Length: 172
Image 1 (cartoon, rainbow, N blue to C red):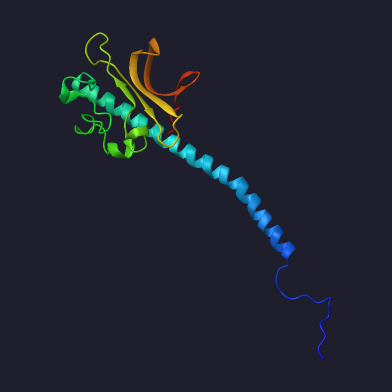
Image 2 (cartoon, rainbow, N blue to C red):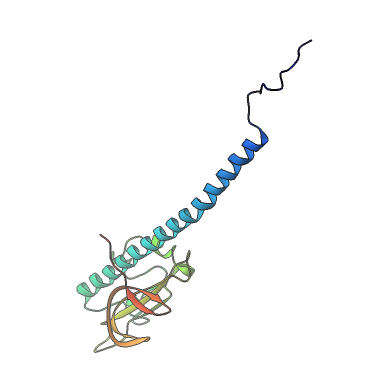
């Protein structure tokens, strides 16, 4: 008769070893997921900021070439379409607007105005809200006639927060 020595052990894991391994994996996952999620959010914000900078440059090139910014409604041929970004997109100033507007809440620029300060359509401002992060709002502007802060000159891309409007620091 074969007897099994109680001190010998078969190859494999004990239940305790397996539970410890699962606990360690769970702990590492609990730490890694928020870090990964934060990195993804930061990446989306950076992409939206870069696109907003490109939108600002498109407006400025349009202005240099035509001497005015897209209008809010008339003439219709120059009115900015908040979803397609026409005439900026149709005239080649902003390429692939759908890649940009797909990142925005509602698939479009939230607000746009081309105030008639001095003369028609010589300034503009637009606000864009992130679809992925609704509280993340950017202002793209070339104006001193912003309804929230008349008189202050804004030219570029800015964060809009509950405590004010802050310039975005461009990364190169």
